[in-house]
Image (cartoon, rainbow, N blue to C red; front, top):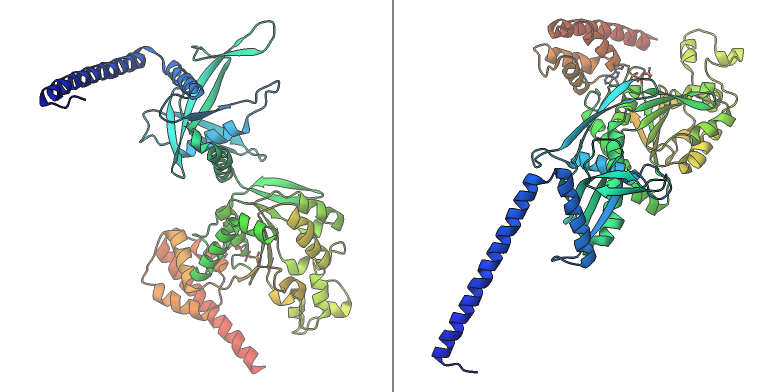
Length: 503
Ligand SMILES: Nc1ncnc2c1ncn2[C@@H]1O[C@H](COP(=O)(O)OP(=O)(O)OP(=O)(O)O)[C@@H](O)[C@H]1O
């Protein structure tokens, strides 16, 4: 090899020339590409450009061109072959993308407004964003880019009633068009796409669907459930109760709802039981509504007084997943009460009155009101709940309510049966502040110190306080009225207390 300076100079000159030529051809190639791209942008309709882009990506993938090998999944709106069924993944992908699309980062988006009617005939609106045919968006999942492109295809009839052919990008004035989505990603992520991304999109879409749909309250009617739209506005924000207890309930619900794998791993049915107890009007039903609104679960309000045991089984197994089964006043519903009647310490509301001279229903051998449903026994109910109900569905909550926890059969109270026992008590100061905020958007008032003092002394339910606050739209008048009411109640309760002590 000649390494002299002269020959090195000559060699360097040739190399520089070659480099310059290469640069200028690369520059002109890039310029041509840019020109072609801008001409295409000017001349070709969006739909055709997207189809070309999509076709090119499929072609490139087939030939293995490009820096990285790519894969493309084509998601049609309907299933192929002879059948013409809706493709569930197409719907899921559109729903998922709708929640991800952002007009601040995309030049244009499609917008639709759909109206749906529930079984009660009530109408609700749903807004959907979607990628217009010809546009793409990139979704990043676990650091991997997934490119979604929307494509519109026009189908032309192949004639003779045969199979339809599809012509991508053909301009169409309506009728026989099909929209599809293409999902492309680097080939090295194929497993992740199929095993994790696709299920993730399905699950996220399902979550959106559940969030957007209206909740239902189902009431048992014979062997079936009649469904109504559930509109109860109670939420944990509006619920007046001890803030620490409230937070612990929310945390418990969230933990439960996110523990599918945990329940599978430990081999336990994915269910949770709450026993709500406390005086009437302290918010037990409101808490159930707040739970349903928080988790977006339907409520199944089971009235055991209208159920026979043969029906009970059917009713329980026909409940949907992600739902709350509520049995109110469980002490009055089945033989829990009749067993309690046998025990000396347990009294029905009538019997409490009887203590002061009335005639006991025990003596007359008359069943207390609503006490006996001869068909349903507590053990039968618990067996159904622990057995069939637990295994016939997932993500279910059971809530039992009672005003008299002390009357419940120990079988209901034993550990493991109801996971959380929640006492809904009289209106405390924190609870009152929530109600004042709910009703008047007020956080402070000159009468508050006096009201706080009275609440510490008086047993008043949140329902009673709510009732006082609801009487007027003027918060000064409402707080004054409440104060007078609390003073009167305080006097009454002190008098009763005195009489009780004298006895
Ligand atoms: N803790 C609370 N927070 C907010 N509002 C409440 C609360 N408790 C009661 N209320 C008000 O009182 C009304 C009745 O309350 P709710 O039906 O929830 O009480 P409950 O304890 O279920 O009564 P019952 O034992 O008689 O069924 C509610 O509609 C609501 O307006």
